[in-house]
Length: 220
Image (cartoon, rainbow, N blue to C red; front, side):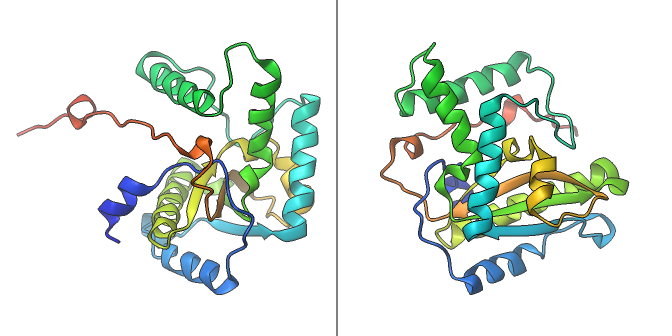
């Protein structure tokens, strides 16, 4: 599969099959993603791959915190607001998600259940948490973003589905209680991955992309 094909086929998978991947498949995926470019070859990402019982117990802790309404305290601030085209795109994306699973406007219970699915990792058998050194600042996080993209595209090449989740970094202290994360690093996100349940309606829709004319300036 070419990179172009992987970009076309990749989507944010929100329902996974429980089948775990072979360890060698995961290691090969990470090995290839490790080729990602970074500033001065710093390779700032640290990876914590979580599966099995550890993933189950972490998920329960995150769900309990979210259900209690604990205030998120991510290491990196989430956007305070979305305005203009960013608000419009976010709204359309949310509507597509809710329509795919039959959540009507004002249905608080189903909306809450859908939110909690984030902390259940959408049923994925594996999650890789990505963190970046605090000292490397924004550009360390930028390099990690490149790694995230590489990982997801390489996974798609292998027929493995993914979803990058900032939501699971909402409660970094809980993640640190379960994983041996370096205190000198900021938790960026998790990538849930495995084989997607393509028959589930939540995986049926695809988000649109802006035309390049609307996001690009050319100078000669």
